[in-house]
Image 1 (cartoon, helix red, strand yellow):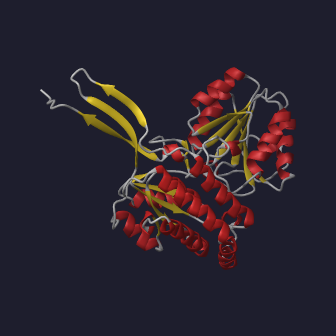
Image 2 (cartoon, helix red, strand yellow; image 1 turned 90 degrees about the vertical axis):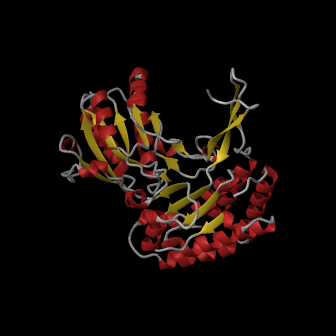
Image 3 (tube, helix red, strand yellow; image 1 turned 60 degrees about the vertical axis):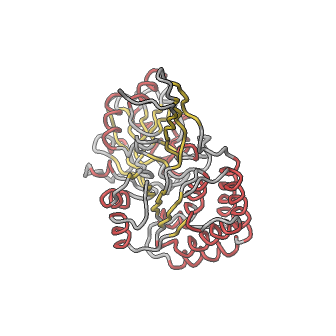
Length: 399
């Protein structure tokens, strides 16, 4: 796709905000069809599917935030002149074509496309069948906004394919494809990684842990754990696992307080053999696989570790590399934890729910990347570009 100037891109985004506002009722009606057709008992999936008036307003806000950000394309990263006279400039450049494969959430149809478009990328949207009606209506908004500004609707394409067709497309795409971002559970991510022939940026898997140190301030511990677990159970930044240090001077009482605070919020507690005797729950974790599992439900696992190093080892083994917390008043221990825990975001005495583009000052995000290449954490506008070298000479040859 050709490079567009910032004025043109911003005009499209202004048109998009207008379309979302004008078609709000149509979008909500389309979403009701998806909600009525929803089958299954996955509450987290259902919650992510809902589009109401406030959600449409959030979409408009996300578009506005991106519109107000500077164009990320063509920014000079380095500019050098070598001894041989070659002038070498490294600038930001679009990826080209980005494919987003996502489940349930219709707002991804807006947030993903607006970021990719402002970064001058063509985007292919492959939404889940459960959100088909909503996505169709939202893509109509995009296409009208593009047409209003004299641009081809090819900039933003909505792909209607079943699993078999998607698999074939990933293996043999009928157009250039530079990057794929799967947004969903582990099954989706593994499916994409197995079949894709281009780069895949892994995002969205949580399974986040909290470590309660022996000196943790219970007045901070309880609200942080409750917020991280219950504020949004369907979020990839939600808390799933809690390790309490075996050396805590008031181990039983603290364990019970944590359990009660969560069960008061209707959270189901499962526990390891080492800690279950201190708790009210009788649900014993009998299979190690539970520690690898992302719950996406009102469920939390409580276990026990023996010291800071043991906590770090366990978290690095089991977590999804998304967001993990240490609760302690010891700044040195907090520093060690934050340096050695291998995840996109590490927290000291704060909720994992802040791993979010808007909360971290990035603005609207494409996803939360747990990859280390090319970026880890919230993928905002500045992260949706690659780089390109411009080399100017006066006839130099390499000898």
